[in-house]
Length: 451
Image (cartoon, rainbow, N blue to C red; front, side):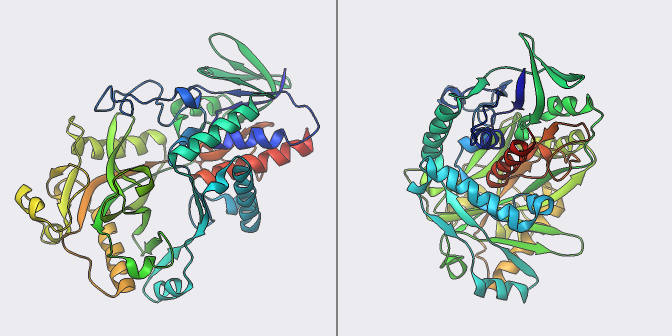
């Protein structure tokens, strides 16, 4: 019988397990992960055995030890975006928890990179006067290589006192008296407490665990938007005091926010669930930085179910992919005239694309709400920088960010089923590495008080 069973080995589960070990009380902890250990998480695209997504049953890019933390490891410490942890535990408490996350990361080597802030009081003031807002954060950007090193050290630390089971699928969870049964094909695990920490990869299986106890999600979010690639110095006047900024336009009928700003970065393809989307690569992740600046402009949309949200996004993305993993590209000047960009125009364009994509007209590929979003954000940016955005700016369709459905939990992430908890991104409360990790620290401290 385990004291605590953690289903999922992403950042929320890792930081929960770490926190539970910071006591003299010897708790019997189980961590179950459907994916692999991080050293075995090799995507066929990454190792060069495939040029496109082969839709693996277990996606090594998002599943396995470290979850999404295996990627570029960008920890944004803020309540402005990345989740609603502050609403659940209080804004000050949420920031204190994220400070604890950073201290833990630094104890494993994260202090090799500097913590920086995107706050710019002058810019915030100008934004308020121009019907937009600047979202600020402190950032510890680890990069892929340092993320690997830290995950390796954290795994070595945890495995000494936590029973970690990789490549183990839990088919169902039930309860008899005061014990939960976690049923796999090979074995039944028994635990007094269950914590679901499956991140964004839980899907229907995660919902199945919840349905076993009549726990239903109440809404699901998906963000879609245009990836922007502009000349590298276009935003110098607002980036002079920070490496990036996050700008939000909010009108009566539309909300749009910049995301993942990459000076000197490249636009790349990302693969998820058989879909191909555009994404940004930080200049630290490449040996050949570009002269451009790229970011996405996302518009959130809410649905009553995960299925409905994913079907909506998949239909749009597949129409662009055309079963050939295509992305579409268009000059801003051509978009404003509602005309298709030609190959000849792209060749002569002053801003050269860093991603090979199909020329086209976004108005024929993307719902107008997402084009409206990027244009409203551009209007806000032009007021902030005091000049027009270059008409040679490139627009790619389409980027997407998926979320798990929101689950009703109390202030300690406990569901209506006693001792059955949901933390991290699968709770729908957090959707960033920092807030997911903080939820693990928060629950860990709570469990140490009651167990």
